[in-house]
Image (cartoon, rainbow, N blue to C red; front, side):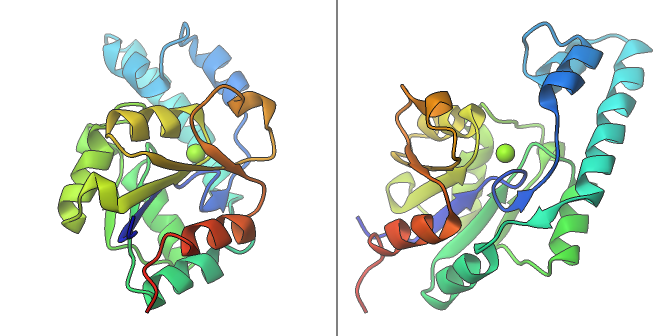
Amino acid sequence: MRLKGVVFDMDGTVVDVPYDWGKIKAELETQGKPILVYLESLEEPERSEKWRVLEKYEHEATGKATLKPGMREFLDSLSSRGVKKALVTNNSWKNTNYLLRKFKLEFDCVISREKGLWKPSGAPILVALEELGLRREECCVVGDSHFDIRAAQEAGISFIFILSEDRERFDAMNAELFSSVGELQKRVEKLLPND
Ligand SMILES: [Mg+2]
């Protein structure tokens, strides 16, 4: 495999953000559905009220975000090797743009939730590949959640790299786990063509 593109998740992957998803889902009463799918299924005025609750939590968490240690070096090394980078997030463009500016990050393609395509669907990843002009065989996905794994699998990407120290949570899943960006970087560099 000659790796030509990396599709990144944002929250928990590129940046560390203090989300308590259990608490948020309980407050929204999502009934086990993915949050965005659940919110879009509601009628007004409940729909707008609950969107505001989610946006409030997202705004708070985004304000406290920190760049994941080692991430800038990793992103820079990909750019210097000519590897394209996409950011695919279920977060809003407003929060995404805020974080990109705050940490001065650049991606070749950014897909936020306004596109109407959300993980765990593979659709937003496929749109990113199209924008990058790359085939699924030439790309890997880097994320931190089950949603990232499901979306990558649905998009037909077989190299799935998860940043997490929680081995149990990803036990039976078909993904490679890394506890630091440095470890991930070494793995990804093995997939790059020798120049
Ligand atoms: Mg994430």
